[in-house]
Length: 258
Ligand SMILES: [Zn+2]
Ligand SMILES: [Zn+2]
Image: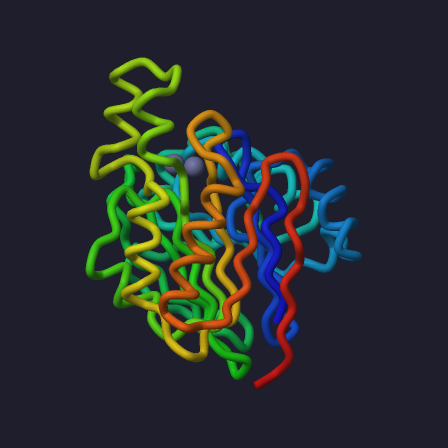
């Protein structure tokens, strides 16, 4: 099992998850060329991929999907309404529609989608289950609902949104209405909200947590990481905390078969 945030933040999001020999991208918000470059940094290329899963239609998550899917003949798994909200996606040879909340097979894997309250037409997070265990993916959350916490239980690896530090957002340069949007039930999770979500779903089998979608203006990677490290220490757990970055692929976390 391998997980790597190829890019994370408001200028582009894409995550590689490899389980049971199946290599998925969750979202493709980088150009095809940049996706290829970042995959190369972990010794992969786009032709090694098997599918793209889409969380929601915001451009920082989808701008590379059309070119990548066409060039590398990749199936795209996308919610019906999200697809309808992407008129410029272009023709995709193998579109696999689902509805938010569906569970579906993908090769040997079982993928579950679950709704989030982010301000998109039908946004989702995912869990990916296989004989190697479960991976949970939840960014652009809006708010940490009970449904999200329930879905993310018992993962070996988690990708969690840690968008902003509340004080930095409050005191930062954003206009008031944008600050309100980010803080709202339909915006993004703060470090504190994300920590309290993790506190609910932490269990002895958890090995790594990726912090994703950090704001470059309203968060600080060191600060965010420290709050999660402190939380894991309080819980008495040895969990690797990896912070995603906008400009380069993150550390690639690999775990052996259980
Ligand atoms: Zn979004
Ligand atoms: Zn986003």
